[in-house]
Length: 151
Image (cartoon, rainbow, N blue to C red; front, side, top):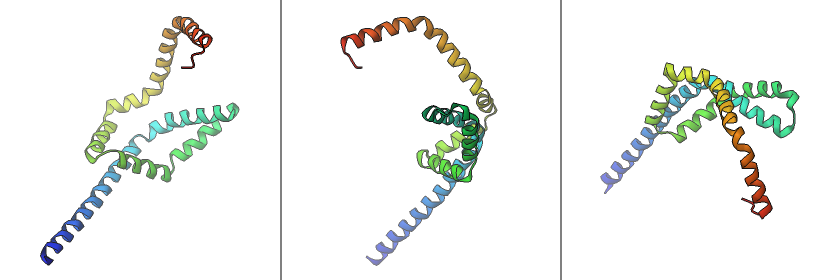
């Protein structure tokens, strides 16, 4: 019985140590991913969050200051650690390996660099397709409003 108890304790300790090592490896990989995506964060996420804050607060004339503030936050060690921890919680080690390989891929890096241009072009494309349909859509909404339908 004592032998069985010792074996159980040994297995538990081994599992805890393995789990801790695995978590450390996942955090290290997640940090590498955060570092690889830093440029995208600086360009895109900061702009999106700044736009939301500016719109919420009505501070349109201070957009540059919001972006500068958020850029500094996005570059902080605290944000890096928090984001890496999130990646490590959400993804398995194999998934982190795949994301890291993607982040290091030169074609994906080119995609990241041109993504803001692509987003702009996509918005223009959507607007050009939307324009001819907008009048008919507005009519449908008016009919729904007149009928008292809220969804």
